[in-house]
Amino acid sequence: MKKNKVLLLTTTALFTALVTVGTAVIQIPVGSGYAHFGDSMIYLSACILPGPYAIFAASVGAAIADLATGFVIYAPATVIIKALNALPFVLMRVYLKKKNKDDRILNWQISLMLVPTTLVTIFGYLIAEYIMFGQKFALVSAFTDGWLQPGGSLAVFVILAVALDKIHFKKSIIKELPNSKRYKEIHTMKTDIVYKLGEGTYLNITNKCPCRCAFCIRSQGDAVGDAERLWFDTEPTMDDIKKAIDAFDFSGVKEVVFCGYGEPTNAYDNLIATAKYMRETHPSIKIRLNTNGLSDLINEKPTAKELCSVLDSISVSLNDTDSEKYDKITRNIYPGIAFDAMLDFTKECVKYCDDVRMTVVDVIPEEDIEASRKICESCGAKFRVRSFSKGQ
Image (cartoon, rainbow, N blue to C red; front, side, top):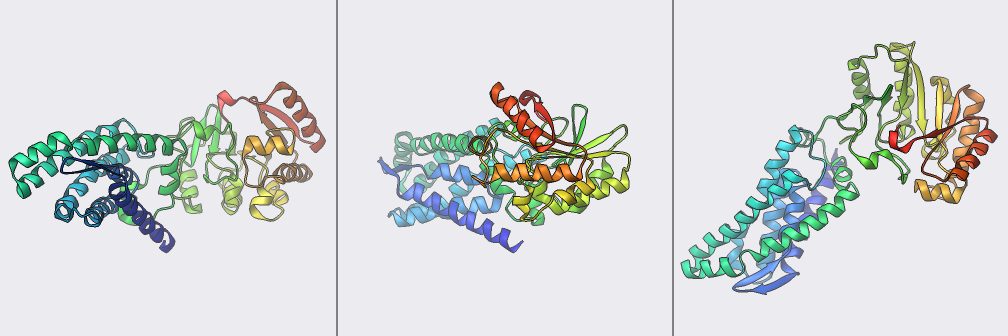
């Protein structure tokens, strides 16, 4: 909790600095003042940070810029106007949270908030300059340069938001921020731990993974099957997993599979405990693990024997035919050693489990699929080609 609080404060300080720099450093002199891109950082912070922190970054960052660039007289107005700039985004995110849709920086609802925040800037400074310098000055300023500042920032914000959404930046940063009661009220979204996809029933127990596979289904959306969302804001505890299992109707289910939006062995202790809990509560249901086979590297110990003791079958993603191709397609964090470790893990599983499979996805050439079949046979496992279009 302390670590997460430090991260929140650090992130807020970073956005405050970005607002200041975007306002004070990148300046385009226009009329009585200057145009800048600081507002784009305000919009960005308001789409990522909890509301009060976003408002702080907006008002304080912009006010510091005024003080640093000689526009001291504008600073009091700036504190209020920039706080109001962030407010439409903050309020919209409260609404989106209730709809479980606040996992991207930019969507059509957020886009609509660019209208009121732009009007706040134009009319806010119109009123401020009317009070400070009179009607004529305020009107001339509003019509000559008042619209340039928010207009330029709007364009920069859209470009940055699209780029950051492509790498799932918001999901990555939010799940590391603190779990205070107020933060949970605004930022925690329901995530499915047990879900169905076609005829299969799956257990999603972690989002952590040492790979970023080029074909990974989680890069295609926030959920698959009947799940509403498979991204966790906070990694689930064993109590969370038990509650999800207890609440799910397993009537007619013959097999449950560890396979969600992460590598199950990244939550090794919970994986073992969950398998044992399924044995206790649903002894007739078979248990399978879909894995990238890097468990020994992830957990820094041999894991095949213990895994096989609680599972009925294991499916290992072979992915490609040699180490170089494997590293390229999986983009794993163990380049040069991951491929051999995956093969060794599979061979160990074959010793302790009667049903071990190796799979490839049909995105690789046909000749590589056949070569993969031979590798699979050399490991003593069964072979299967998975369809990318059908997901898991």
